[in-house]
Image 1 (cartoon, rainbow, N blue to C red):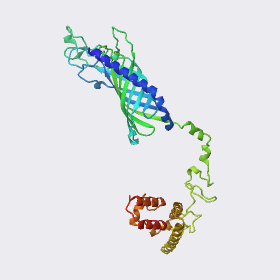
Image 2: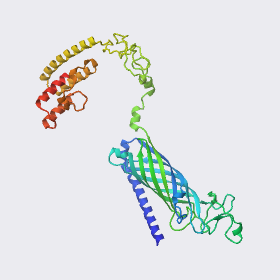
Image 3: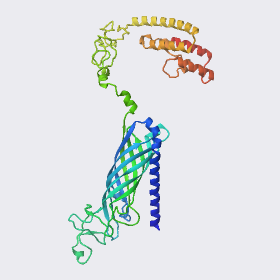
Image 4: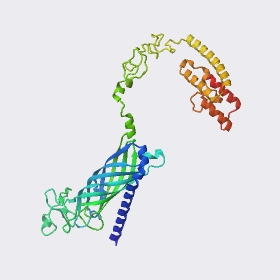
Length: 454
C-alpha cells in the first residue's frame, strides 16, 4: 500500500513538472516581444560548483544521514532570457553520488559510489518584484527534463584485493565468520576505494535513464552582466538502480550549488547600422584645434591657432596663476597671489576699486532692468535677465555682498543653490496664491527686486 501511494505521488510530481515545463515553453516566446525591445542581451552562460547527496535504498536505515556522504559536482548551462520572468536553458551536471550503510546489526553493509552525467533542458520562472530596488535579490523556480547516465561501483575489496567480511560483533575481517577463522581472522579497515563495478544477478538493468529536475533558489544581481545564484535542485529519476539495489521507489538525488551567470550583450541591429560607417580610427587621430594633441587626449580643446600647449593640450601658463601666457598681461606675477581675469595681481587698492565699479554697475543695472521689467513684465524677459546674471556670475570678480539672499526670502530658493531663478519666482508666486507658503505681497515685490540685484 505504501509503495502504491509513493508511486502515485511520484507520477503526480512528474506529470505536474511536464505540464509546467511545456506551458512555459509555449508562452515564453509570446511574452518575449516586449523584452527584446528593451534589452540587448543575446544569451547567458552559467557555471557553478556544488555538492550531491543521494536519496535511495542504500543507507536508508543507516545510523548516519545522507549528508555524511556528500560528493562534489559542477554544472554548466546556456540560458536564454525571454523577459524578466521567463528563461529556457540547456544544462549539464557532472559529479558523483555515494552512500554507505553504518549500523549496529550484523547484516552486510552495502555501499556504492557512482559517477553521473545529467544533460537536459529547464524552464525557469523568476519573481523580480515590482520595485527597481527589489530586482537585486530575485527568487526563482525551475522545472525540466533530463537524460541521466550512471555507473555504480562498490568498495568490496581491501587494498590487497581481498573481500571484506562483516562479523556479528560489527567488525570487518579478512576471513568469513566460521570454523577456525575465529582464531586466525584479523581486523581490517575499509580503504573507501570503490573499485568493483556492481551488477544485479537477476537483472541486466540499463545504466541510463531520464530524470525530472525541480529547482529553487535566489539570484543575486551583482552587475547588469553578472549574477550569483544560490540553488537547490532535486532530481527525480526513472530508475531504482542508481545504487544497484532495487527496493521500493526510484532513486533520487539533491544538488546544492553556487553559480555565476554571465550575460552577453550586443548592440541592436539598427544601432550597429547607424554606426557602421563611422571611422573610429580617424576620430582617435583627429586634432580639431591643430595643437599637436589628439582630441581624445586634449584637456583644453579649442586652443587658438599658433598658441604653445603642454602635453595635455592646454596653453602654457608660466607663472601658474590660472591665466595662460597668451592672455596674461602680467606673465610673471608672483606665485600664490590673487589675479584678475587678465592675470594682473589684485592688490587691496585694486580690489577696492573693482568693488566700487561693480557696485555702481549693479545699481545701474538694477535701475535699467527694473524699468525694462515694468515695460516688459514677462517670463521671457526674466529668462533673458537670468541668462545675463548667470553669465556675470561666471566672473568671480563680479560677486558683491548684495548676492546673499535675505533670510525671509530664502524660502523662494527651492533648490538651495543660493540663487533665485525666474522659475523659482514663478513657483513662489503660485505657492503664494494657493497658500502653501507663508508669504505676503510685500515679500513678493522684494523678491522680484532682489532678482535684479543678485
